[in-house]
Amino acid sequence: SRPLILLLGDQLSHELASLRDLPEGTVIALCEVAAEGTYVPHHPQKIALIFSAMRHFAEELRERGHVVHYSALEDDDNVQDLIGEAERLAGLYSCDEIRAVRPGEWRLWQAMQARVEAPLPWRLLEDDRFFSTPESFDAWARGRKAPRLEHFYRLMRRRTGLLMEGAEPAGGRWNFDHDNREPLPSEARFPAPPRHARDATTEAVLALVATHFDDHFGRLEGFHWPVTRRQALDELEHFLEHRLPAFGRFQDAISDSEPFLYHSRLSAALNLGLLSPREVCEAVEREYREGRAPLNAAEGFIRQVLGWREYVRGLYWTRMPDYKRGNALGAERGLPSFFWSGETEMRCLRRAIEMTRDHAYAHHIQRLMVTGNFALLCDVAPEALCDWYLAVYADACEWVELPNTLGMVLHADGGLMGSKPYCASGKYIDRMSDHCRHCRFDPKQAIGKDACPFNSLYWDFLERHADTLSTNPRMTLIYGSLSRMKQERRDALRRQAGAFLGRLDAAPAYPPAYAQ
Ligand code: FAD
Ligand code: DLZ
Ligand code: SF4
Image (cartoon, rainbow, N blue to C red; front, side, top):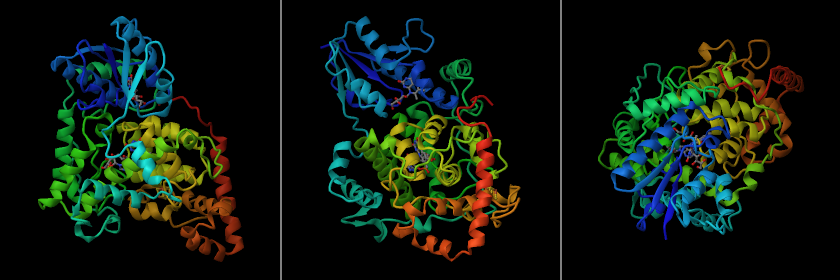
């Protein structure tokens, strides 16, 4: 046979299943297409990252002696859609089948599956760059009343032997979360992230993206993402040396000025395939074993990659397409337009959105407890919020974005990602960040013109969703506080939140002009 291998922009690994055992005459195709750039308005840095990484990877394949067809965005004959372009190229090179590895999004998986029996058949292969597969996840989850990350994570630790001492977890505990909740110390100094050199390929892509996607939210100027495996390995080294030791302690902290803190910045390189999750976890484990990083840091990191990353992928592939329709709290508000402009007086939101605009990045707690928490408390519709998260982050791909947004943030999956919603008042943000001292609102007040909006929104959210949430055993304490509150105060909080939501609704809503 003479196959055409289609590699997607997040399949840039030389070990990919479709690159094994290639017959003579195989053509490998990578295609830049407008359809993938615009199905949501991706951040220009995300598009530039993917195009530049694709171009570099194509070059590496050529150097290894493969026949590669690279469809550039501006090629005249490019049909600008992945399926159509792959089939056009298969015709052009007289290929008799198209091979592809499971993509990262259901919509493409469906489109490919619909062609498995076409005259020019597609052969679909499993993506084995993960620790688990959808099948193994399904086998684990089946028969459980409620799948929980902690159980899955322990199984994965045992299976891989990562951070294990025989049958026991290193240090005698599975989870060091309690050591990982320190706010930022005021004198903290953060290592500057590496600035990877932009070669001619990256410069050309930045110019291309500036021309074609200039109406998308996000700035290109600060582009600094690793676009090759070499650069991604440098990024990993930098993390191990400068950030990992403090990663655990300050994992949940938020800074008004620093976007990256002690986070690894490795998600995009992992998701694109420039690094493998196994090598990253093994490198982190080595730092612990050789005494360069404490256990709470190594465990905190490995739990994210071996635990959460695999868990969300398992949920995605075993629960789609129904998962995407989940709306357990019946949320229907449009996305506030300031998510696209940053124009809000709420300092924490403003800074999270500005960092997102400037870097195509915000760390987990900003995504979960600032923008996410706000959307949860305001009943923003899952679809509107998911489209935003899928568009604005360099690491965003639906298999990981959707369970995090719809499940973890919005509790719209009815509790598969978390046994309770991560709702919080201004008190939490005040404790974990230095935002509030720059804000015109007061996190200690709940009522009045200077009150932090998170406070009344929080209590009003609990009131509105009492039918669904008050019977949740993990919410008993907080509903206890609510029921002890004087009725007058409850009424005042409801009025305060109602007025805020009224103003939000009066502002122009999604879809916005993406330009700033
Ligand atoms: P670090 O804090 O250094 O964490 C290390 C690694 O662990 C990350 O690189 C990532 O691979 C993994 N990880 C951490 N948390 C999670 C998680 N909750 N789920 C899966 N993997 C995790 N991550 C994505 O890769 N793509 C997304 O589209 C995405 N969307 C998100 C949307 C929301 C609403 C939320 C709350 C989280 C989302 N995350 C997503 C998870 C997490 O926020 C990012 O992986 C992380 O912020 C990336 O930065 P980092 O590499 O510096 O992470
Ligand atoms: C995100 C993205 C963008 C912007 N452009 C392309 C592209 O032109 N060609 C391509 O192969 N992949 C692109 N991607 C990544 C895909 O959207 C991603 O592979 C799918 O969403 C499945 O994970
Ligand atoms: Fe955010 Fe409220 Fe603090 Fe302002 S006072 S930064 S709105 S938590």
